Image 1 (cartoon, one colour):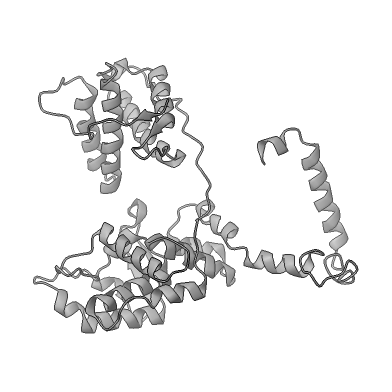
Image 2: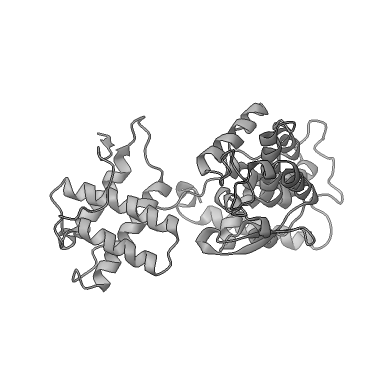
Length: 368
């Protein structure tokens, strides 16, 4: 039977709580995270994740940390797997991990503080992360259609065009754009300073001349009418003269994507995927794209090598005997896929590896 989530929203511990209870230890743990420089977003996510866990435990009579055992944690993990939202949707494995990681960190902290004798979460196995490709990526022509949607005859339309151009040119995250300052633009070098990005890391990314031109137009014609004194130097402002809110920014970009009638959906992150994919298709080294996106590990960026199949498609069309309707069986045999430059050796190695895969037990069953 599908399980529903907690009826009440997780809340911080109240002052009259049992000082030895989990709900009393959670604020201590969150303060410890804050003192040690954890990002505000991380602390907030920890608070909500632990709120769900503590609520779940209390509903089952488990109130103190030492009462939590490994079977209790396994039961909580199974509950999350069977959890269903109000519309019947399950939690993704990524969301399940996001709720379990703070729990594991919480019990590690409890052990180090000597609040419990052993860590029941030390062997907790997280769900295997999904390596899903972006659902939608724009072509260059489709991106231009979206960029053309704002009404640049209006102040907010001109501001939004500058925002879209910035997303498209740099591939920065929504929160990173919201935090941009006037002083983060280097017009001479054509760069943009992203301060305190993900994991609180700064980085410098290139920004194109066209995006800079639209930003300059916005700064000259629109921002002076929006800014309130004292000027906090935030680059993109709302109608109230303050920085943009995340939800409104996402809604605005989403509406422009829908207005382009491409049959594709998305918001700010859509331009991040698009920038990375188009650059890769144009021959950019993946390590340069990694630096632009601010990925700590190259494996995170490599997903775009699977999204960007244009080069692979060209090779397939040119060399596969059945790729085109007009090609005959004997066409392209000389100097094509099988000719010259030590290709016989490469062919032998490829056939040997395929044979080894076929001989390996269980590979096809496991989908590898």
